[in-house]
Length: 256
Image 1: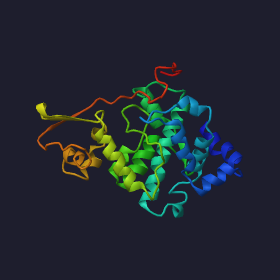
Image 2: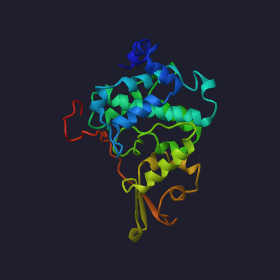
Image 3: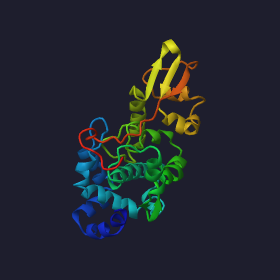
Image 4: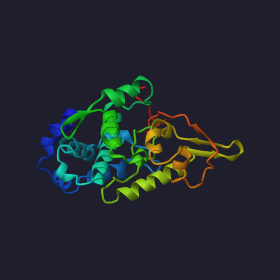
C-alpha cells in the first residue's frame, strides 16, 4: 500500500485541491486526521480511518516526497525538522496499524516486524520507524520528543488531536511532557515505600533524559506536578503493547 502512496496517490493528488492545500499548509491534512479519528484519551478509530483515508494519504504522500534531507531549504531550523519528523512518525505508525491488518498487540515478533522490518518512503528514502526515531529524531537532541512520539499502543504518550508545528513546537512539547507525568499510568509516587513508579519510556531512553539532568528523578521533577524526593527509588512500569484502538473489545481483530 505504501508504494501507492509514493507513486499512484501522488499522481492522483498532483493537481487536486487537496494537493494545493497540502502544499500551502503541510500539516493541515494530518491535523484533520487527528481531529476526526483520535479520541480524547488518544485512542484511534483505525477502522473508520481505513474507510476514509484521503487526508492521511495526502499527508503521507507529502512525507514520501519531501523531508529535511530532500528539501533542506523548507526546514530552516531544528523546530521545523523536529515537527516534521514527529508528525511523520505518528502518521506512519497510524498507517502501519491499518496496513498490518489491525493487530491487537505489537509485542514479541510483531514488534520487530512493525518497527524494524516494515519500511516507508520519507523524502525519497526508505526507512523503518526504528530508523526514523533513532537516526533522525533522537539526534536532534530534544528528549521531550519521547512524550510526543506515538507508536499507537496503550503505554505510549497520549496522541494529541492537533499536529505539531515549528512555530508552536516548544510550547507543545512542554505541554506533552507535563501531561505525560500528570497521568498515573506514567507516574506513581508511593511515599510510604519511598518509591516512584514511572513509564518504561524513561528506561528505554534513559541516556536522552540523563543528558538533561543528573538523575531520572531530577528530570521528572522538571515536568511532574508533584515533586519526587531525590532519595526515592525508581521502578519502571510494565509497558502495555496493546494497540490503542478506539474499538478495542467491540470488534474482533484480524491479526493477533
